[in-house]
Image 1 (spheres, one colour):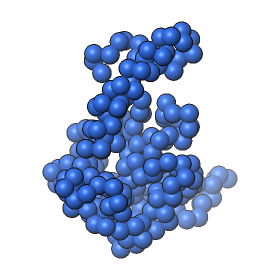
Image 2: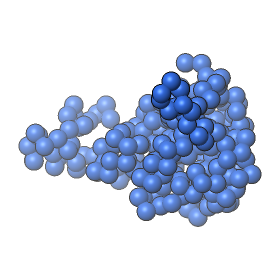
Image 3: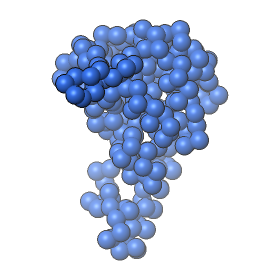
Image 4: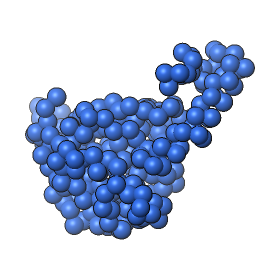
Length: 223
């Protein structure tokens, strides 16, 4: 990225001449095909940093990671002292590509872990995927960590981002409240973050003429 021209982030800026936009897009495609895609497959589609890993470790809670892929994030979390259980359908990554143990299962396994924090890192392959929504429906716990893009935080033409579906994000916002956000390093063309969501109370409470949802904001996090 340091070797790219200074205007590389303007590859889709309509005020830039078409010829220049074409040059920048070609640069990004070349680096994506030769380097980024290989690294994403080898490691993960979202880039971890120590701030995010420390944030999760400071929650002092066990984690269940859905759709763990290679298990790279999970391995790093374990190195930071986090108790992690991971699962995936294991249809893509063979065992020799995994950095940590990953159980073979679907979202229904989440019903066994109501006391764990749910981690969803780039859970959906495209907008038609229901994996993240199915995880949400089976999860009985109170805390979710989402890693990836969200509504309005994307360079993609899909305003919901490239990580989780519209239906999942709408359901998440109905039942959970976003309490924390950490910006992550990004592959070119991505705007990933780690966000923490807490489950709202099931019924709104009347407080002096206004309705509120109670959210338990107590968590051991040091910022």
